[in-house]
Amino acid sequence: MNAMTVAQTTAPEPAPHGGYRVDRITSSRDAGFAAAYDLLDAQFGPRWELERREVIEQWLDAREPGREYVLLLIRDAQGAPAAVRDAHIVHMPRVTVLYLAHVLVTPAHRRRGLAKILRDVPTTLARQLSDVPLLTVGEMEYPDPADDDSIVGLIAYGGAGFRALDP
Image (cartoon, rainbow, N blue to C red):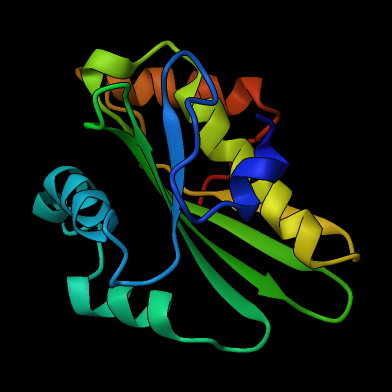
């Protein structure tokens, strides 16, 4: 299954990659919403890096022209949440901006290509929805030498062609 197929899918699909299933959450009423939000909140909420549940619900349920909120949940073969990503797509007359916000691959599922899937699906979706150039941006906190995950994240984004801009 390729990223394009996954991006178009709202219902569970057969395992696309090594026994994993990618679900696109399109409504706060979707079965996977609570699992996706809870996974993000457990990681980013304590650091005040995640919006409140009501805000995310509103983004999902709003049908605002030119804007799309994307929430993806990857489940393992047993159906347990393995990874999550949220992103924003904003269409403008001469460019579409894809903002890759939060991403989390749970420790037991790292180094299996899930982060790449979670980067590719929103990119594919943004390209499907627009025929103007795509600008993709991602947000990362400063690396922490005491936190290996922050270093690995920077290396992964760099390997995907992203450049770090110092604010």
